Length: 114
Image 1 (cartoon, rainbow, N blue to C red):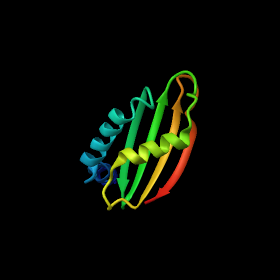
Image 2 (cartoon, rainbow, N blue to C red; image 1 turned 180 degrees about the vertical axis):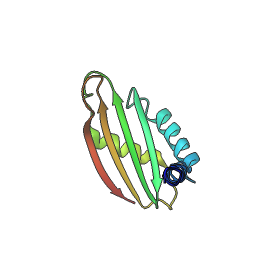
Image 3 (cartoon, rainbow, N blue to C red; image 1 turned 45 degrees about the vertical axis):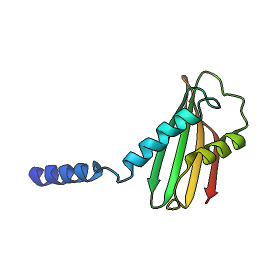
């Protein structure tokens, strides 16, 4: 029984370790956003995920205080700099403040239909 349980655990762990076919594209978009958005967002970390023609862009702003920005304009700048092909139908952008103390705070969240 223990061997069967161990085998099932191993198989399930390996099934989650499979890489996404979009990993390279996601990394390229993250690097592109880091360079293009540096003048707008200082100390930002980008995480892009593409699944089933949907793109999720998570931006984490680091610092002790929440930056005073127009987040609608920041989201429009991100959309302009994504430059994705027509295979992406929907884009969801979340901007968070990654505080050194306490939990993350969501500053902006918007769904865009292409």
